[in-house]
Image 1 (cartoon, rainbow, N blue to C red):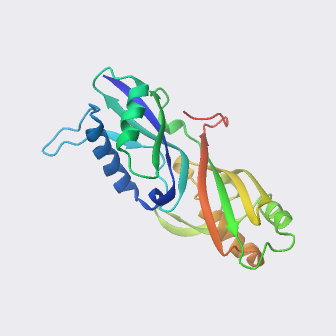
Image 2 (tube, rainbow, N blue to C red; image 1 turned 90 degrees about the vertical axis):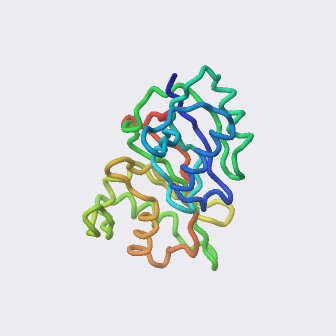
Length: 219
């Protein structure tokens, strides 16, 4: 019996699978792949698995994690192979390895925000965006467990830069994760509030990586 962490991608049509359905998908995949994992106890036992930092519906993820405990001596390479053989379109296991670091050590998520403009990129948008998110205060209405309130999201932005690529604006942002997480959608909401002429007609979000407090890759 050993702890295993699976790193996977979620893309394409799979981005519209909710977190609960992703959990059910992995439970079925593990059963079909013949991977013996630890189950919960009780009247209706099911595989004991957990996913770190669940993605919002519609988001692409290139660096997602699932933790489980396997009961046999199956190699990590065989785990990857068996899971991918039974995985639905859009979800692919990249690697499996010994689970050593607790998920609570994740402090930041790196997101790429692609913003489209029907009438072309606004004039001077890159400088405007970089100047906005360099401020010490960027106040927006943010949801929390206690409801919605005005929040300064600037301290939750570790790093942010805007560039242009193939006619779109690309924002690369390293945002707080964990207990004080910042959803990248709030970046777009801040643009809508402070720079309405730069509000995109369409936005797409991709999680590229996750880091610990020292901005070291979490694995």
